[in-house]
Length: 465
Image 1 (cartoon, helix red, strand yellow):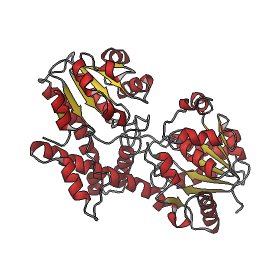
Image 2 (cartoon, rainbow, N blue to C red):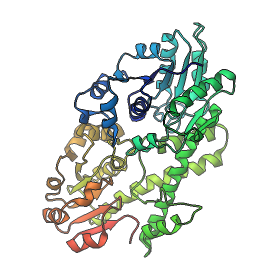
Image 3 (cartoon, rainbow, N blue to C red):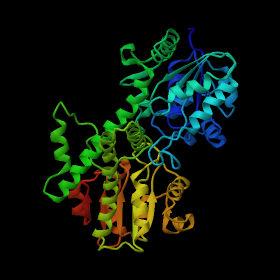
Image 4 (cartoon, rainbow, N blue to C red):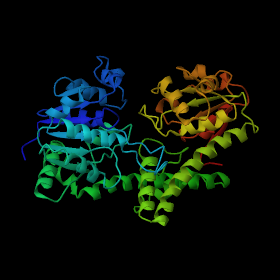
């Protein structure tokens, strides 16, 4: 198979944008085109002001500045991108189904199928199609079935190349990947396609870190990796609840078990709960797959990870209500942070959404400050839940651009994202701004309890009595 010279990526979101930007940086001989039907998103990728990029990731705008309109292009002309490319990445959203069979667990593959049908319609030459979106096992089979029945005589090879990116460190994760996983058919043409994609990554990733498997193993590995990571978070969060009922400190427990070389220290930081686009969706997908094969005990095991995560968010909200004398009606509660983690503007499944929803049900007045998340996104997140009308959400919740102003006459502050800047605030000035007694609920464990208590705060830190 000839060397790849033109790549197209369908989907300019959190995976497609950063991944293609790094490929363009490291493969200057390859023309990389990112296509998306969302005109507003593409316009932002092409904006001369790099601070307006639709995705915030440390280091991303510098890479885009070096590559854009040189060998990296962003376009709404999907058909042209497909037609010109030898290798096509599919990197579109695959949310959990909200309707029909598998509702609440199975992945909605509507966007994937639309991409496959569009590729089949446009392609005139042989193509390598790469699954980049997180997909259930055997999705490649469905894509291949659609593509192989075009009747045009075009040959397609389907590869699975799941992403293992953590938002907030996506660029570094791409540049210094632990591993790259490529799944494909065991046929001569499948092996050739796998090697062609491997050669792209070999421009900066050592070949020994590029793993080749069959396509099914690759698809399942992505789901299992996220399930194992989420399991660790839920496990330590379950122990944080126990620590709060005893004199134990979750930080000390995490450190102690993290020193065990069999366990390790990563993903043992207790918090108000995990969020993001992958963990919950992938576990629910795993649960659905297990149930579909009659493996109910397997499904129950993994579903408990989600149950524990939901419990942690609910427990945090309930603690705010009980601490504020069992009522938050008309009380002003400030949220520092809305993104699901620091260094990203992604809010999908953020703990803040669900904590806010619970408090709004109690008629609290919520003020939100996040350094990277837009007002529109915050309201859209709440409206999507459908708990109350958009008008009521806007009446009860306000978004502000200044954290100090937000604290004026506030009853409590809840820290929902671990942004580094929150540690540097003048907390004495914030205390002076607030009604007394002044409460802080640290859901990310970023502030020192003794220091905050010395300032006069009634301070709650998740995982400590």
